[in-house]
Amino acid sequence: MRAALTFTLDLEDHREHRAAPARYPAITRELLPWLAELKVRGTFFVVGEVAAAEPALIREVAAAGHELALHSWDHTPLTAITPARFRDDTVRGRSVLEDLSGKPVQGYRAPIFSLTPASRWAVGILAELGFRYSSSVLAAPHPLYGYPGLPSAPFQWPEGLLEIPAPLARLGAWRLPYLGGFYLRYLPLPLIQWLRTCAPRDELPWTYCHPYDFDVDEAFTPIRDAALWVSVLLWCRRRGTRGKLARLMADGCAPPFAEQLARGDFAQAKTLP
Image 1 (spheres, helix red, strand yellow):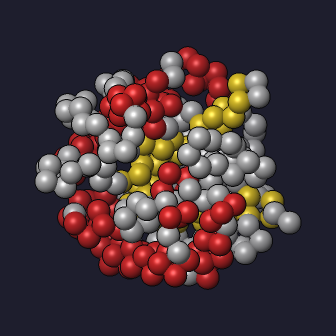
Image 2 (cartoon, helix red, strand yellow; image 1 turned 135 degrees about the horizontal axis):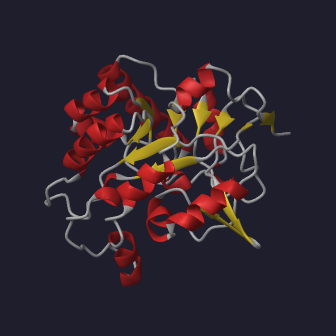
């Protein structure tokens, strides 16, 4: 039997210009009743600055039964900050989320899956700070960030931190994420469903989305320091996101990551040497 999907969302502010109105609060609020109707509770990885700017929204997410986990303080990739800044930002971000929800924050996701060999030091800091799991690794070569050679199934770092890597599609020699972001928006649903049937049994399938993936009315804005085609790629094909996810989650979803951890779902995860 295929493992049930886990819904995760990276709650971040992707605006290029802060003078423009923020659209993520309204989009997120539209998603909450939709997820409730589907009987889906997931893990929301929240950027600390977003939590500080929109405390009422974060309380609403928590009140709807979703887990709050940290997605950095300001969405700076791990490879662009020092270990000292990472520690301070992580402590600050977790504190904001815990104050808003009244619950411990157990999980962390690095911006853009930027936990790589160059930022391996972050694992030790997360473990020292008491985080129980990370979902920060893309275990394949990638134009942005990747960590080839790691398992794609959940595993334990030697420091004791559980890692839940991004699920990967296997197309010949290619290994690509396929259950989130623009991959989810652009790949045909039958192909995504077929790729799920081909996934290794020990790999945990989870979706990862962002508020903008559902924002069909946002005006096109070129991304600073990016090629035009990248901006277009991230802007197009949003209209079908809800429908695809609804179909993928129709057979039911797993609970948030922290609840899976509490019930022992990762007990068989192997520890890296």
